[in-house]
Length: 231
Image 1 (cartoon, rainbow, N blue to C red):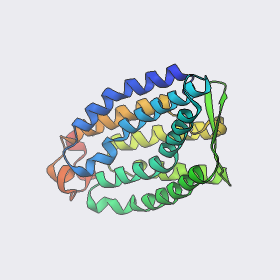
Image 2 (image 1 turned 135 degrees about the horizontal axis):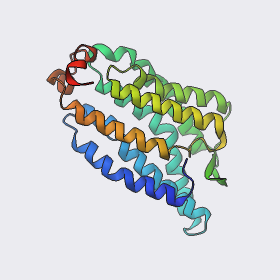
Image 3 (image 1 turned 45 degrees about the vertical axis):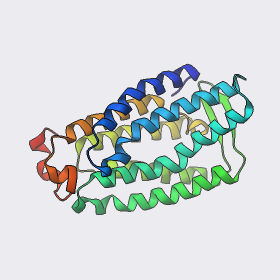
C-alpha cells in the first residue's frame, strides 16, 4: 500500500523510467494502450501525492479536489477500460474473441463508476497508512467484484505467459485490497503497480522477438510460437 506522500512520490518517480522504456518498445499503434500502463500508474501515484499534500494543508483545497477527481477517474473509469482493451489489441485476431467480452464489461464498469465520480460529492479521508476515497456508490461490493473481473479476466486468458503473470499479480493485489481494506481500495495499488509495470516492460521487450504476425498484423496464434521465442 502507499503509506504516505513520500511512498507515492517514490513509487511515481521510480515508475517514470519504466514507462519511458516501455513506450520506446512500441512498434505499432495497437501496442500503445498496453504499453501506456506504466505511465498511467506513475501519474496515478504522483497525483495521489498531491492529495496527501492537500490533506496536510500544503496545497489549496481546490487543487486537492482536482487531484482527488483525477485520481478517481484514473482508478475507476480509465483502468477497467484501458487494461482489457490493451490486452485485446495485443492478442492475435483469432484469440481476441475470448477477451472481447471483458472489454464490454470494462466499458459498463467505467461508465457507472465514472458517472458516480462526476455526479456525486467526492471526499477523501486519511486512514492508517492509506487514503479512503468516498464516492456515491450503491452496491459497492458488487461493483468491486465486476471491476476485478474486468481487469483480471483478459490477462489471465492471454496467450502470452508474461501477461498471464501480470494478471495473477494484479488479481492478488486487487483482491487483497478489496478484502483487507475496502474503504481504501482505490489507494492500495502502488507496491504491486511497480511490479506489474516491470512485467509490462518485460513483455514489450520480449515482444520484439515474436514473429511479424504477432507484432504487426496479429494474424498468428501466440500459443503456437511462444515456446520458440522463450516465453
